[in-house]
Amino acid sequence: MTKEILIGFLIGVIANLAGSYLYIYFFSKETLEKTIQYSIEQDVLGNIIALGAILNLCAFFIFLKKNKVYRARGVVLATVLAALAILVSKFL
Image (cartoon, rainbow, N blue to C red):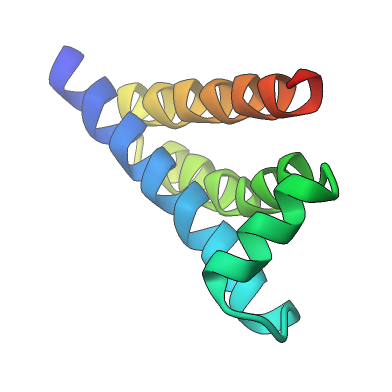
C-alpha cells in the first residue's frame, strides 16, 4: 500500500515537472533558466507550477480508471505538494 502511494507520488511530481517544462518550452522564447529566473522576479512561478499540475489531473484519472486507487492518492499528495509550493512562492 505504501509502495503504491509512493509510486503515485513520484509520478505526480514527475508529471508536474514535465507539465511545467512543456509550458515553458512551448510558450517561452527564452531558455529554461532565464524563464525561471524571470518568473521568480515577476512573481509568476506559482502560475507556472499550477499550469504544470494539469498533467497530474490526467495521471489521477488514468489511475482511477485502472482501479489503482492508492497510486491516485499519491498523485493527490503530489498535487498538494505543488499547492504548498505555490503558497510558499507567493509569500516569499
